Length: 106
Image 1 (cartoon, rainbow, N blue to C red):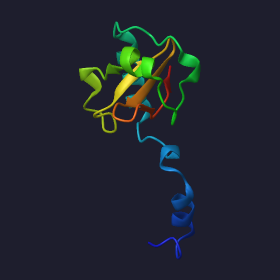
Image 2: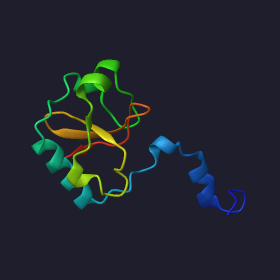
Image 3: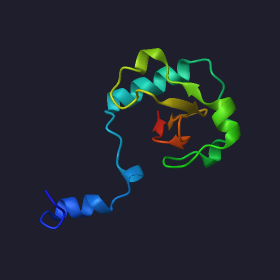
Image 4: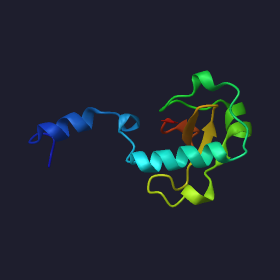
């Protein structure tokens, strides 16, 4: 329905795409978190700047981004994403743009 007719669509049209919530369920988020934390990949060194809709530094993109573990790649919304992890969070990343798309905590 055009935003001229629908107030809801008018509001949605004004929300930036990067602010749209991810469609992962709590169970999916927990599974991704546990799987990524169990992976023996190193944690990010400059984690203070990581946040949804933020970009990775070149160093983070090259050295600290890892492919999403095979066991969670089948989850809708995770296909094609990589991740960066800290000691207590996992940040799914769009590899082509180096943009953090979500923040998953315990």
